[in-house]
Image (cartoon, rainbow, N blue to C red; front, side, top):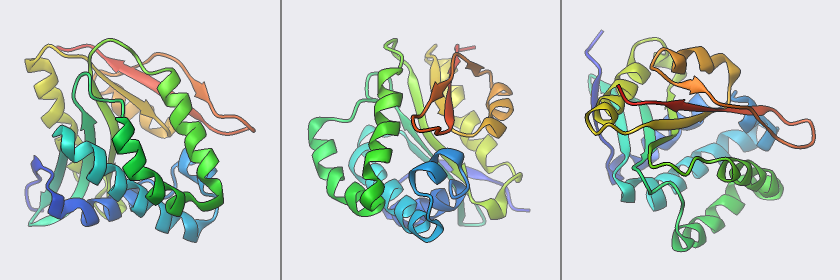
Length: 202
């Protein structure tokens, strides 16, 4: 298998990385709760990830992609310290696409966003908002290469890192990189949980 290479994400990667992340999160418990219809979820996730990347993450310089033999297999969307809150302008630019992505379920998407905002730590940190690899390359080291790339920078800057795991199956994976669970956030109406995780620099 070709070596996995990590590089900064570019505007030209938006469509492909959104497709990869859409497939990566298709069976995620929180995404299933937001968009229970399979076809709507396939369309909606792609649009959501492309919109967030275009209007927020690329501007902050926290996007990285992993590829092998030229094929993009995974992407990570990070916010640098002090940059995790979307500006009012970013929110306005993204809202029309979010409404199209979620349709009548847009309120459920907002509930997830509000819950995460409410519990977000104030201490400056790198925020791993999204990381995912295409199911076709899972287990081939793409996610690991992306995690290592940015966490090495966190350690060099003596900066903590934070994420929310939306899938209990992934908690052990993040723990291997030094993240620790700090709580549990439960969505309303019998919805699933998210697990905030914090990592001290090494």
